[in-house]
Amino acid sequence: MKRLIYLILPAIIFASCGDGSKGNSAEELAKLKKQRSEIDAKIKVLEAGKKDVTKATPVMVMEVQPTEFKGNIEVQSAIVGDANVLAGSQAPGTVKSISVKVGQKVSQGQVLATLDAAVFDRQIEGLAPSLALTKSLYEKQQNLFSQNIGTEVQLMSAKTNYEGVQKQVAAAKANRDMYRVVAPISGTVDRVDLKVGGPSAPGQTGIQIVSYDKLNAEAMLGENYLGKVKEGDAVTIVLPNIGDSIKAKIGYVAQSVDPASRSFKVIVHMNNSNKLHPNMSCIMKIANYTNNNALVVPVSIIQKTSEGPMVYIADGEKAKAVNVTIGRNSNGLVEIMSGLNPGDKVITAGFEEMENGQRIIVQ
Image: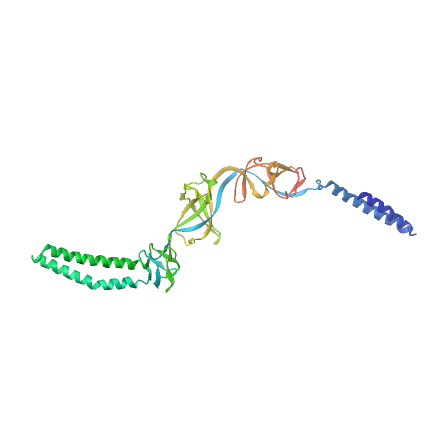
């Protein structure tokens, strides 16, 4: 490229001199020489392929000092009702009536809906006369026997007949009750999957009831965390959707690993709070590590090199590359295990394209 410029310039100069305008040739020649000097300077920079290291780069620094560092394990979790059940019928059938709605509070044992059980209703009605008759005969036989009239066999026979009809009525009522949806717990109706005239199938459709008195935050941790968390560890439950958080402690740590997901369950028992709702997503931050004399820096300033993690520190008026050993990281900070000393001024801004030994100016 340089040779080409040198060949072109004499031709331009010669042409300029040959046009008979000697007054302008000196000015034109000076202008061309200046351009050539500028081009030569640019060529040198491009050929060197390096920045001008003599120019000071403005940087920002932070002085590292021992401080308390808490390491957290963060995992996505959800709020789960400790008592969260689907109330349904014990037998399949057609829904006849629904007596509750979403948001309504219900008590344990309360009938929430009924299915068509006309067959058993008619059976109970049909047994009513027999029940009344056998009861009357038994009571009369008891009265006679008390007066020494009749035999014990007659009394026992009347009693057996009465009890037999009672059992038939009880069986018919038990069958009829299988066509009722009854609340197994006290709580709030969260969802109604039934419709009048529609079908109901045991275990598939019903009425969801949630108890807000016992809510848990549950998460699944990878098996690599086994032994690193324990019951009683401090936990922060972050509720990002409402911009709030709740302090708590781990209440249960599973001792077995799920073979499919290779993870284990962690449960945090939550106090009753109007901030919490079943199936609400949250973030579980488990504080499982504390170092009271840690040197920490922002994770963002750690640079990966072939020799390992590295940061720049301000060494007088120059930047110095320092290889470091990093430990745990949490909340955007990372623990420096070796490579830095208290009082070192770590460069936190302006290091992106820096070179070791480059001149800097601290702002």
